[in-house]
Length: 102
Image 1 (tube, rainbow, N blue to C red):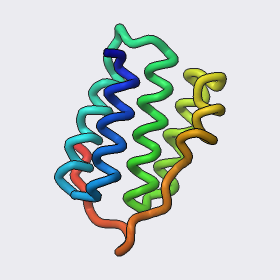
Image 2 (cartoon, rainbow, N blue to C red):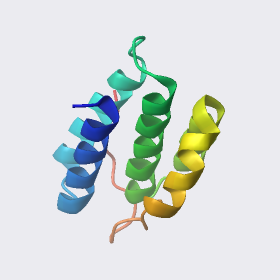
Image 3 (tube, one colour):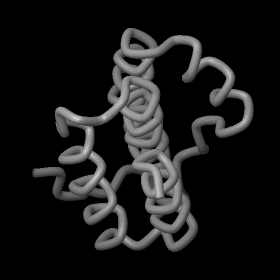
Image 4 (tube, helix red, strand yellow):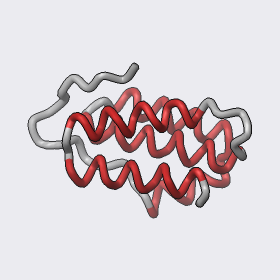
């Protein structure tokens, strides 16, 4: 399994459930994974894109945009096509809820 595949799976599951605990868990795992030194730039960019998707779903568009910009710095050629196949989701109903990120 590739890191980016697991990142996509975690992100999709967290967004699908909309559960705060799942969002927190996915966010923590992806954040830790994004710092892993042995990860390829393409995988790191995808992980950052997935963090952006989680933030967008949580209603934090500014943080989502910041993750996208960072992902583009890591691998623009990987992230830009993904924005059409894996767009940032709309914020969940009910607006922003506090989700622990550390």
